[in-house]
Amino acid sequence: MRVGLLQEGDLTGTTVENRYHQLIEEVALADTLGFSTWGTSEQHFSPPSFSIAAPEVLYSAIAMRTQNIKLRTMASVMLKWNHPILVAERLATLDIVSRGRAEVCTARSNNLTTLGAFGVDPKDTRAQWEDSMDVLFKAMTEERLEHDGPTWKIPSVEVVPKPITMPHPPVSVAASSVESHGNAARRGIGVISFENYFGFDYLQECIDDYNQVFAEADHSAVLAPNNYRGLYVATAYCAESREEARSVARRVTMDYFKFILDLYIPLAKKPGYTYLDTLEQLIEHQDDMDWLCEYSPSVMVGTPADFIERIKKLEAMGIDEVLLRIDGVGHDNIMKSLELIGHEVIPVVDPAAAGMKG
Image (cartoon, rainbow, N blue to C red; front, side):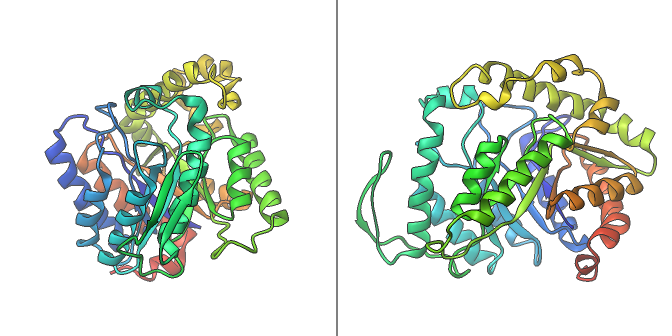
């Protein structure tokens, strides 16, 4: 099981300038410890928990400080404000400067503030994502791109540069609903699951549906079918004792959970997001960190032994990689947590990666 890192520039206790430079140092350390992947999301208008609005700039800086770790956008929002040609050009540039370490995870936004600011109706996000994905693949692989779709009308153009990874860097999508998992499987692309704090049974339902649809789908027209299955762990922190881990990470765990609830409660009423129609249990436990740590795969806070036990459980469910959001607890704590995971967890769950350290 691979262990990756996802961070979003939480500004608690610091400034944007300091946090960005801290992030670069943290990823440089993770690279030496055997972490498989680093990524960040494109977020707008949501400080202090999220501060990275132009992630492609950070990726280039981090590429110059690392050697082995994969650099995956998590996620590129494929809606009308983010033209898929620009996504393809930036991805190809990152692939070049990182010498073939670029990957892309795409998404349709679940943030009503962002959708409103950029003038996108929530009911249109799935259709826009579908058409943008068609353009993205053409831009990465075809000598000349031409497209006539419901969202994008593009005359024949030559997109430069092209990625050096052939036929293109690995592609996945962030998915929260069973339906989105199935859509990813039909396209032949990987999936990064976020189970909305709905629990292990819901996550298993999503993974099982993805596996079944992928096995049954016709991927003959797909250049590089990819059945990667990742899991986004919204809050992670590792310490020597469970008490220390939960004490340090309590605020960020509960703040992130409540941030998600604030997004989901109004979003659940919108067409296309009907998988959010059972929020009562989450609202009931919105102040219960112990319940979250046990019930939800989205929280991994504890000792190295706790991490190993949880990761092995997720591996048995069919997950290939956990993506740990270790952020918002201060730079020193983050570095300590990375060291502990790198020295005590990764050698057990991913011995091959541990052997690549240094």
